[in-house]
View 1: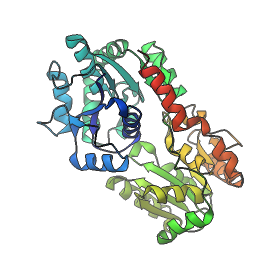
View 2: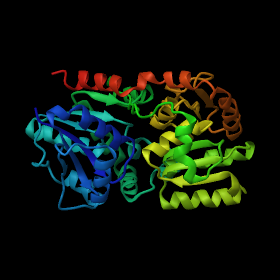
View 3: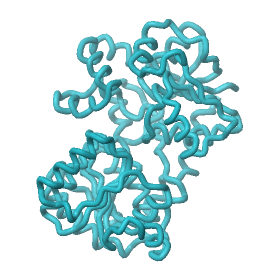
Length: 387
């Protein structure tokens, strides 16, 4: 069986790219091909290195004569289908790659599954403010533009694409409910798992990896790919109600970093905020282990893997109780707290309460065992290879 895992772009490393990497490991015996509409070569090297992609797994570009993402989007609509993609089964991870998969089924009879990480934001975001926050890159600006002018047609097309898929995978109950509401189709929940490397470590081990950063022994942490829609400003503003030191780590675009520095200076918090940027996996595990509380302030997060990684390391988590992904993983008083949506004072209060849970490190770590890689692999392979 020839399988192609297809996604729109390989231009950044986030949650979707991590799931694609996991699928390449789970399907390694079948030797799938990873295909993208366009590929940033530097990011491709980082992707292979960071996720230990096997040399036996080909990574191809559908439109290799154009590296520009905007052109790749237009080509996915203009070209009837790509003869380059030949597979018995396609697993698509994005709107444009799913559209290409649909055309391949229509013209060539190739079957496809879709992993819906969230319904296309450029089609289903309701408010101007949400769209403005979402449109933080050229490809997203183009998508919002298309959604604004061609929304009725694109929504109609999106529903046809989803209707013709063999199976739908989703990353949480929250996303499953959205999919059911929009498409009137059932789906298989396949939670993005945390790696077994994320575990409770001794304080000595953790501190040995953090000495070079010269951060306080006690701190709260936020981490991730901090694009504007992740709203890291919420926890910075909540520091006004706290006495804690905040450490910020992850992939931080230059514009976001500038905005963080401006806000920190404006609030007079320069001595209480440390921005580390990208860290190694060992350093991240050490940060998770050492932090008193991990805070996720992204609104309506579809799933949220980083809180689970933190909890696997024995650290309580605080997130918004907005009925999104973290509401399925954070249990009040057990492994963290859910704050009243977008209330900064309540966010600060929940951080204070969560600190009292840190001494229950093993219990917190055990609370996320349901999101282990072994369980996710079984769920995925059972549904994906059912034929």
